[in-house]
Image (tube, rainbow, N blue to C red):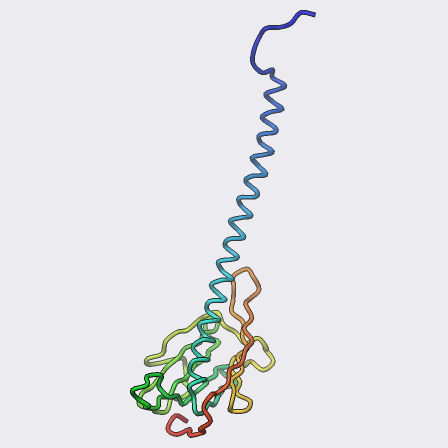
Length: 192
């Protein structure tokens, strides 16, 4: 046998190496695309969880400093108003305030908050939050569609929160918690 001294690849070797390169490149591209999708889902779920935590944190802070709480609902519109008579967190003053959290199912569901100092009545808004209301989160809906409630105050001494936050293509982020009034006074005027 005579040895061929030509160097380089044969056509078959080039075709095989090109095919293997395409397979490896395809696998790498698939992994990259799945990584991007996973990152988007994680970011969406994290944003929804942050929204839920922001709403809960605001309500827990207000309710823990409350001397009285109540929840009013409009079953036709599906709105709710959680109201609390709170004591300020500033140790230099003990002025009472009224704080409210308003849930509306319009535009995907939102929770707003409002505080009045000195304490004055905050009425259940008709037609959406008007005046000075701060948006805490959107994409919120009741976890239990049968009751349609985001806030519940069954005993007057605690507030139960149970809601979902939309998370894009992920089904939702569920928030189910409760918080208690830490003060024993039951004075409710002038907030309700």
